[in-house]
Image (cartoon, rainbow, N blue to C red; front, side, top):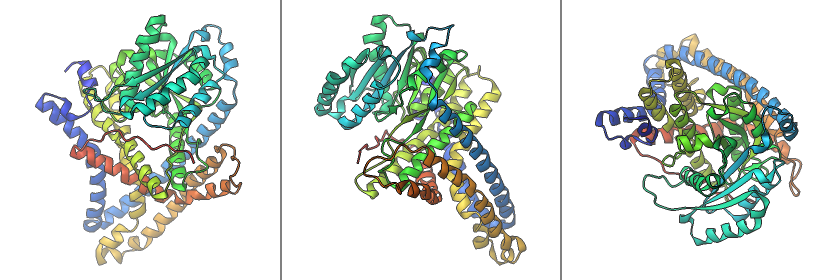
Length: 511
């Protein structure tokens, strides 16, 4: 199988060779086997060898406590860097770069949309129009879906009339339905739109690919005024900028004051995780709204046959360039919507579905493991490091909260009378509860920083809301299990059984 063929794999059935297909299928089973094997093993061994499980529990609790302090430190440092970046005048900093001409850099912004309301699209476009970066260097692509129907084509035409004069170019692209080999969703829409803007604008005007950054945004993404200036500065000052993607920090402030408590906790937790990952850039992959050099976009090819296109484009480029590819962390915010629906029950269902779609990123594990076997040019230690990071990350997502919730009690309930009369059985729940109490420091850090990241309180919202948002973090254990572990296990079970997911579009409303 040549390089091009294995880059295009989305699932085991894409491979013709029976032996190779079986290998890929085994890799698809690894995330589920590891996670479910851990949970089943804890249950079985708590019954068979409760003493050894208790020792494992103590070690795990201290390991998790170490991780909490480690992550909290990165979280604080990430927050401080973000606040500094948000205060800088990046346009002035661009003007001070003498060895490169920043004015030649164009930004293509692709906004894929499917049945989102006109006002949501306009708010995103208004934020782009308010950018301090020269508008004559912004090319906006509104990528709509043919399957959305004529109503949304008409909305797109109205928006084009209102905004076409505000940017260098404004292009409407209609993504045809039922293209063979595609998965209907954001990835296929972005891939099609990227090729259309290449043919219709970039190649016609003969703009060098090296002078273009392509931003793949969710349609609800709103940029802060200095975002493109900041992004351009990083691009021009980065060593070997064509071998990198550029990742800002997502916040979910568009509707943060009106959504349910669990949506706030889940979305803010995601922001903090991205801050932590920014501090560990060697482990960072692209996520949601991000930027790619046009040369990479067209040379590597944006994935159109996967659900998690935002992470797949990174791994695709990493394999294509034989490991010579990375993500540059940008400590600058972009704002999106947290999950919201007319009823709390629908919000809970939609939040679960969104988390499950994100957890489907576990499909990157078989893709990268198989790609590492095919690509002989990537250093062995890099393969091991990335493989461990991926497997550990999805294992922790699916199991850590459940283990912390149940581990201190399982040996006592299942270990029998012989174990229950030991001093260890008496002290185990006391020890684990104290370790978990100390670990609340991490939750307090998140609670404090979450209030400091909030946008100004809008009219009609009580100032007491800020206090309630602080105390909503007491529900973190609940959200970690219901909207963390469960959807992650759901996704991994589906992958393990070969029940592949399609792309589910998160409902977007504004209260």
